[in-house]
Length: 255
Image (tube, rainbow, N blue to C red; front, side, top):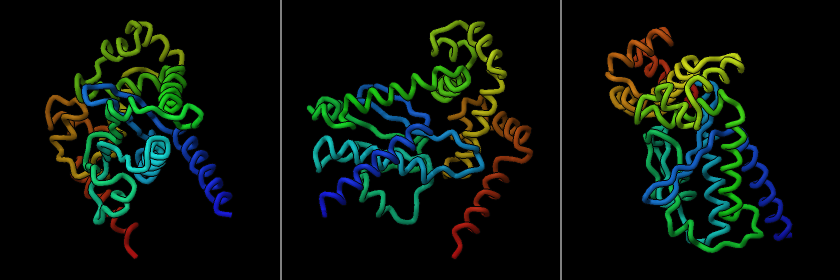
């Protein structure tokens, strides 16, 4: 009976994992520390997708733990949301290395973990998982709009995501990118503006990052430039939007 229960749980975890992964924006970033798996949800900005992101990362950590060794825990887990009143559930799932009010949602896998030998027959073994993540990225890249949004998100903080840099990130010329986007019924500027607005809403409503930090992460030259952009796009100042979002969250969490 216990074996059947464990088997059912395993199937449920695999099902939820694929459902969450199929609706997520996932990309891999290699650096000197290892590999960071970035996990975001591109739902409407008014929807707080925090729980979906946390569940997706939790299932990813669980699957990796099952295929590595029971004592393993992520070297670093980054969560965009503000720190909750209790960290108990996060510690239970991810151990101690959880950081809130980060600029992205993601999980660091060290070089040591990536080099660990795994059972190739496991569905979520390291090679299979990385292949699945790359497959997810390739699937999104088939859509010019999705690929452009991904590139804009990656390049906003470092360069402001100009057209030339976004096109280069996709290994094509700016004219080719513009032509492909036009064929999809949109423009580069429209995607960039909407992406910046969506991210601004999330940072304001879900984190305690200062307005100057949000402005820098989104690639604005100054806080005043960010404030003007947000007021024009949203119809109110960033501070007012944050206060309104805080009020909504308080009412939703009230008993």
